[in-house]
Figure 1 (cartoon, rainbow, N blue to C red):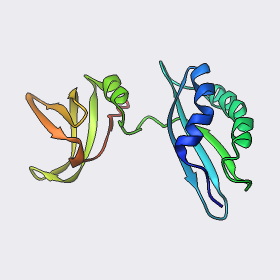
Figure 2: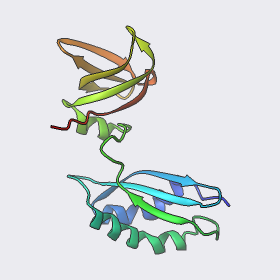
Figure 3: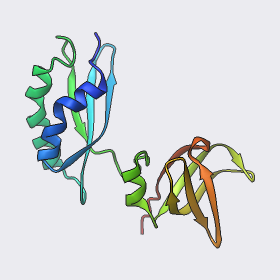
Figure 4: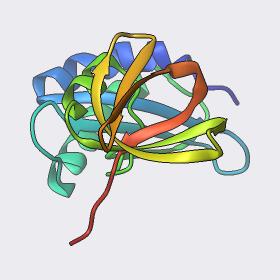
Length: 154
């Protein structure tokens, strides 16, 4: 069993996402005994709720069948939000998080630390600019294992 490419899947369901005011955040396929296709979506503005996820699931189910995304094999379709701790990946993700606290996990330690909590103050496609206390510094994206908004529970 093999799924078609994630690009083809996005092309098939992209117009429906757009009409629904949603953005496709990612596509994940799982092969094996219980194959599955998970589509991660978020609202272009504001958060997403379970009713929206269910409505979108129902809207794309037939489209995916018509596109024969699994080459005739059965699979489970899941539609989910990317979650609060979703990684920042695209320019739009970085723009949305500008000025907010982010958690940064590095591939290798910088000044003895692999985990940082900073404020995102800049992004140029190759680097992020972070502010920790009064110190502002530029960090190349290829040094970052994961960067996401900091989640604070009060």
